[in-house]
Image 1 (cartoon, helix red, strand yellow):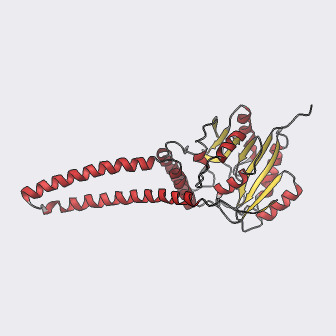
Image 2: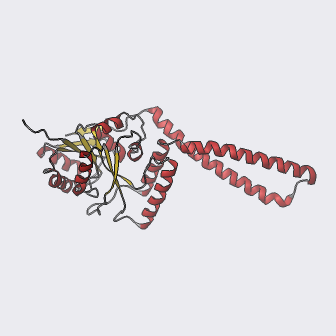
Length: 310
């Protein structure tokens, strides 16, 4: 009887990575051709302005295990990965970057856990080579607050380098939200999950396309889209602040009635007002973010458009 190999899809996205694509595919071949898996590379060109798509097309024409998808423009990493995942049909899918910072030499670790029964294996990033000290500090601060405000839906230092089983992939496809943040969404299905420490490699060619501002915006929306904890905090805070304000009004009314308006307390009053208004505006800002997420969901636009596929 002919032995049927398990199937594996490598899911990736590329934005102006013309200097890395060939080396990325060669590294996959080196580490997967003898893995015992029937594998494919599914890669999206996420609006590149260089020769990335031309290189992907040439590779796909000469290698039957490559599917290239060209998006109409840059829709962002999360939606590029979503576009490719919809074409994945393998027993397992591994999501990874195409710049070799998520290196194929670590794929066997993910596959070992998958073969042991895990449906979801993801990377914990302990070191970030080539990243500035300021960026590393900001990342630590973000993950600290994100974990608190998302009720641990976002796990500190979780990376996008991850393996998901067919069942897990199907579960993710049933989540209908438009604001996608895979690191938070992956916690929700509840399948057997394993976190592993896998180092990020130093980027040899090209430069990172993820600015701090983009990462921060994506992270904040990811937190808010996957947790109502901040809304709960605002509700409790509103009640407490209203009660505190009521007590102040009562206290000042009594003072005014018995001793008149004490001019010496003018600074205190102004200070309390400024603090109160600043907190209120922070609350409005948080509510505005939730409203913007509702706006995106209500419009229900497609997350991406595919211009070409090879």
